[in-house]
Image (cartoon, rainbow, N blue to C red; front, side, top):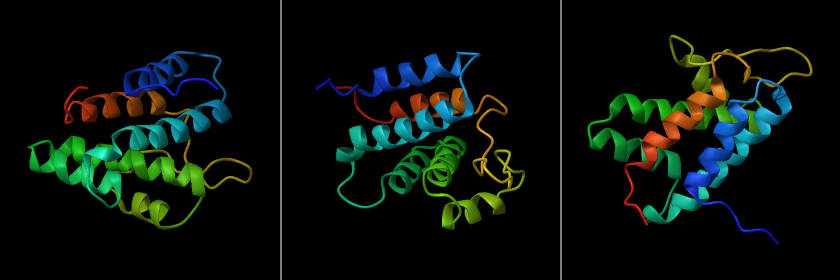
Length: 137
């Protein structure tokens, strides 16, 4: 069994794929879901109970980082859409103006275009900034 990566290694792995011009949409989608899920798992202990990204958004906003708070939550919604398909997260994303990501409704494709606008690079950046809200261990 291999060791699970810590948050820094997790983000470095995602950044490496973001920098790979040959990365396929399927690889990027899988990395997004894995990165968001593992980020939550590694840092969940910082909150007593409840939905991690909702609590993270509240913590960041309370610390004066309102834009970062909303951006990290928006990426969480996007990862949820990639993981589960349409539903509440997609409806929330559709209400955001201007649209934070390219939403698509094409047969056989994910509901979010992960190849557009440096999607994975943006996710890594926002998670790295959000990580600074927690004490280093």
